[in-house]
Each structure stands twice: as C-alpha cells, then as structure tokens.
Image 1 (tube, rainbow, N blue to C red):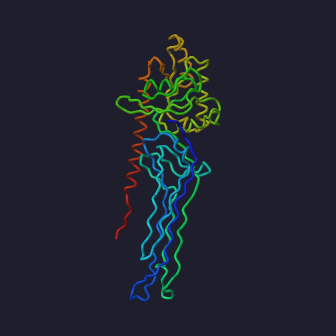
Image 2: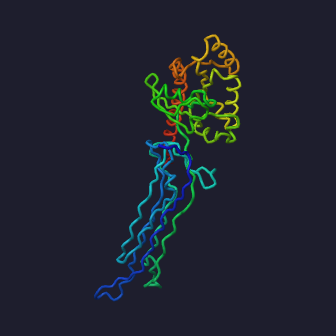
Length: 352
C-alpha cells in the first residue's frame, strides 16, 4: 500500500428539500385548508477516525464528496425523507484543516472519533405553517436551505510511542526490521526510506509502536529534503531513539545537526526524552567504538548505547531504556484523561 500523508478534498453537504404547497380536497369538505408537508434535511458529511488505516492514499483517487438533497415535502402533511449522511473514514492522527492549510478544524486522535464537517441544509416548511386568521389559504412554502461546501486539507501525523531519528543511512530501517515485523526497504545508500514506516515491538509484555522516518539533513526544518513533511510524523511520539552511524567522520557533528533541526522545527520536540545510540558498532574495533562513545557522551551529556542492528547486539537494552520513558508517558496521559473524565462528570446544581 502506498503511503500518502496529505490530501486536499472538496466536500458539499446536501440542500434541504422544498416545502410543499398543497390543499385538502375531499368530498363534502368545501374549505379543506392547506396541508403541504415539510422538506427533508439534506445529507451531512462526517469524518470518522478508524484504527485500520495508516495512509490517505484513497483520497488521491476520490477528492469530491457530495451528499444528496433532502426529499421535497408532499400533500396530506407528509414530510420529505432526510437524505443519507456521508461518513468519510480517515486514519487516527489525521488533522482536518481549512482551505488555507493552517486553521485546524479537528484533530482525529481517538478511534471512533466523529467530526461534523458540513451540516446538511434544513428542509423548507410547507404551506400548512403559514396559515393565519387573515390568510386561510397560503400559496407559499419555503424552499430548502442550501448545504455547505468547502475545500479541506487532510494531513496525517503518525501516532507512535518512539520516533527513530538520525542522518540518512544511520540504520534506522535496519533497526526497525530487527525489533519488529515491519519490512521497509533497506539498501546501502542515503534516502533509501522515502516515507515513514511503523512497526510494533514487544518489551517486557508491553507493546511499543516505533516510527521510522526518512533521514534528516541540514535545513530539514525549512523543507530541505522534504524534512518538514517528515518531522511532523514524530510530533506525537513520547520519546526519540537517535541513531548515529559509528563509522561517520564526526559523530558529534551528526548528533548536533539533528538536534538543531528538531529545535528549529519545533522547540517542544527538543524537550522530548531521547535515547542516543551508536549503530553499526560491529564495523569497528572495540577500542575505536569506546572512543566514539566517549566523544558523544561528552557532547550530549547522557549515556550512549552501542548497538548493531544487523548483528542484533545491544538492541534489547536500548528498548528497555525506551520502555521506561514510554510507560511514564502513558501513565501521564492516563492521569490527564482521568482528570478530564472527572471534570466532565461534575454537574452544576443550585439549591431550591
């Protein structure tokens, strides 16, 4: 399945049905009076977040969504039927933005979340509603109210526990393959990964979702190498695993370059928990690896893990450390949700 993380679509809700102008006509009833029914409501357009989608590729082939008009009213005070609503299914993590691409209308982060994007037009009233003491036979009924139409941007931000970050060819996809059942393309050249990949790892009985994004380069926050398109996919991650190629010319420079791009893109990203690991450590002698670790630990001020995704060495220890942060983040989110539920359950009352 091809990956697409943004799409522009057009939606149009249905117009309301027109009210009916009708009069009662029966034998022996000389002045039956008006009996025109109301028009039905036009179809509305909703968005629903579903768990079994992870791309917006469907919207490349279908960009227009138009709901039907409500049925017109009929005689004998029969109201028209309401038109069927349209429910557009989107992946969890999809942002719905206005046509300007900046105004956020909805953030679909919960499975089953529903958002009303365009309300169907109300049906017009039939002439029975316009009868009065001075107008016993009104020959007027309301037309249906028009629906809404608008262009929207859909932008997907993947929801994962851990974001794999690093320079191109740092071994992120190899790491993802080693610890999960994901099978991204792997090759010995930069920018092998052209779109984000997700994988699920199990650590101490806990499920951990990892997101592998394409490698970042200098200027990524400004869109160089489509960096801004990729950085958005790690905004929702609880922690980062920063992979650095131990065979690179300057591991400290590589580390600082990525950290700079994170801060320039979004300062909140730079505040997230980060595990630093030197990858491909099987390619150098042990004493050389220790020298690289010492340099990097001095630069970043934290423990640096020595791993080899190809040889599957040091991976479990790295995942265990990540799991500590992820469990803490999940507990924090659970506490926040619990507080919100408690506050929503409180009802105001006043004594008699």
